[in-house]
Length: 470
Image (cartoon, rainbow, N blue to C red; front, side, top):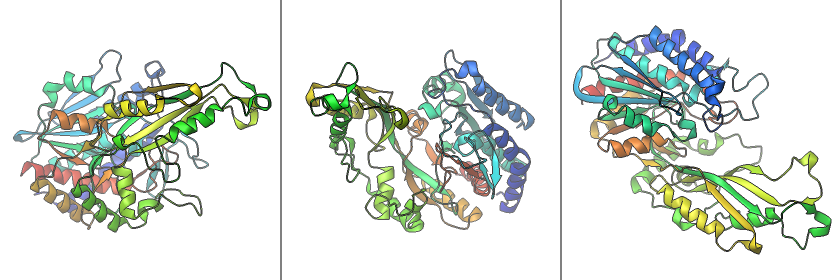
């Protein structure tokens, strides 16, 4: 049985001496994911991130561990660290990623995506919390147990470089390294969120996603708005009418029933407990303007909205000039980039077909309507926690945070989870992370909450021990 005080002392010092300085250097590397940097290979930033990780692993070796570097042709790389264990027939996969979202605007003065800044124990910069810390925290957790002579199962640390692009390269590597991965009975993923920084949060589900573009063409070329308005329908108004088929603009509810799915009662109960613990922080964690309000509904309903109900967001556009150069022209087309979040249990491929059908059937005014989707991703609904794991999560949360563990779905997507769930249906999952209030992954001013991350590392370390004895 590991000593909690020894674990915390080891983890805190290891973070201070070896992890925080390395994540600081990692933040400086603009290794955007492949969808945001198609020339990633030529630009070399991803290779820089990989070499930083490899060098660090070599500087902090685990006896007997074997490092595999995957380089399949035309694909982003992958790291696998195979750490031998003391328990027969048990394997833990520990997952993270080292690719990043793009810069975004709105960073505070003196802050930036590639500018690491430490303020109030928070390390600001792109990728530290999502998900650069995972590799280093995983190794730290293993070392903390070995330092006390605690036995653990074989661990395979898997670090990919295409997660922010939907893990497009990961399936090929899972097949390629099938012999190394083996048949894990526990998966630990450190790429998720936390409702607060006061206790351990276990992610019970992840929404699926489908992203694509909707384009409406009505003219071959732009014409004078004074001459044509009232005769030629605006492509913008047509696209608004099409979107009204999908979403109630007054409530934000997705109208297409095929995109909804039944919410299991267990998830509703967990949402109620999470909402009780968080209170209004369910929505106050977001940077609302003064006087602005969230969706209508109770805090429980807001939790379910962001974890189990479909939504559509409009995240890009073409065809609209900047305001300073917009002339009196009725434009020939409007194009929007759409991002759909889907219920965890919904088939994303069928969802794409349903959305496409609704948008392209009987287009207003005979306009040309084109819908193009990227490869969608299914969501994930965790299997029921086994008694040992349920008790383990509660124990480690009480040990290191002094509060009970809570369970809640997340609104984002981690395609790796669904894929592993299909390949290893008997595996248990610990999906957690450091993306708590205001951490703002994907947006400006992303930060890593260092004290919370240290405690989370301690929790993972003791879960290794509890798994070995299960």
